Image (cartoon, rainbow, N blue to C red; front, side, top):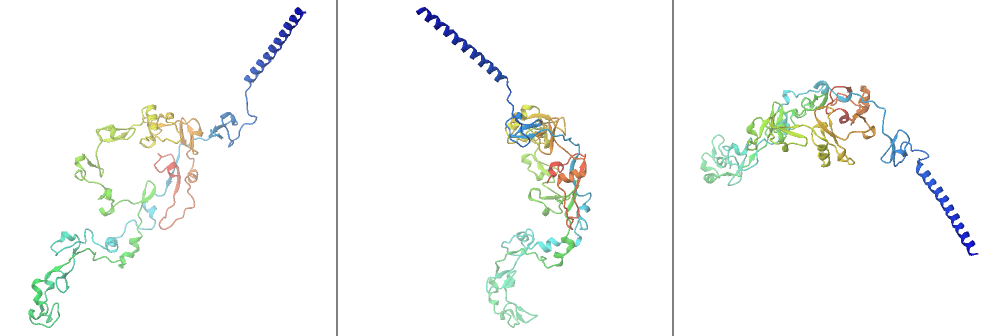
Length: 421
């Protein structure tokens, strides 16, 4: 009986092990099958729908900022750009108005706008022999030390007999001799005091017809510069100039006209109307600039390596030189910057993050050869839309209209995005 029981037990264990082996085999097959499967969403996101990865979006879309968006556009870059055009001559800016005031208006500022004389300070003075005290003014009237009569000199305080009238000069009593005058006895001790410089402009008169003369008031101060009507910043006298460039030289406000008007102790010289000290070391110049020791000028040379751009961007140093600027956005990693050839001058490097697709660029740019480029224009109508030129009104003070021009001429500072106001 015992032998049979042991054999039955052994057979049962073998059966159990077989069942476990079969179950394990099925389990392994199932795991391999699951591993080989690729999970795909039933429907992929359309433009504007939320996403977590590119695979969540439909073909042709990328997951940008958690939203399915198009990142490649079939837009060709035009070699032309947009510029504003307002004038060809000064007359285009001014219409029928005079560009210069007639000669009759030369004294208008003095008569209508200058109540006090230039260089005159209201301070105490004694007599007219001190012209430097009052500048362009004069020593005004004072009062006599006795009796308060108005005077210019001490002699004005003397009561004397005036033969032509037969009366005393101050007391007005009848007389034939000085001694008969009431205040004669005080003449010897009289003084004229309390005199103050009179700074009043004797010709100042706002009621003068010159102050309302239309030929003087309605002078056009616009000038045509680079096809735009701008305020004339020229000068006629030093008074027309600001403190930073206080000398009117040939109609232009400058800081200096000769070296001795600059700080010679600081090795400054007068160049093109302004005091400057030439550089000696590169450290005196801006980022991506070097000192030209012969001219003393800081010259923009651009970046020389990707590392230079990474270091500049990482330190928030924008550099100089127009298109050479490093512009660090809030989400930009400095390590993305590389030194690329400038589109303006291939011999100079500029720090930029190369674009990979149109989605890296602004709405009016597309990615071309690693650069975000303005889409440009084909005709003037494109530029009118881009620059928002519409509903203009012509007036006497603005006789011109702004035109939109699509041109392939070299861009100016006022072209493209600078003009999109």
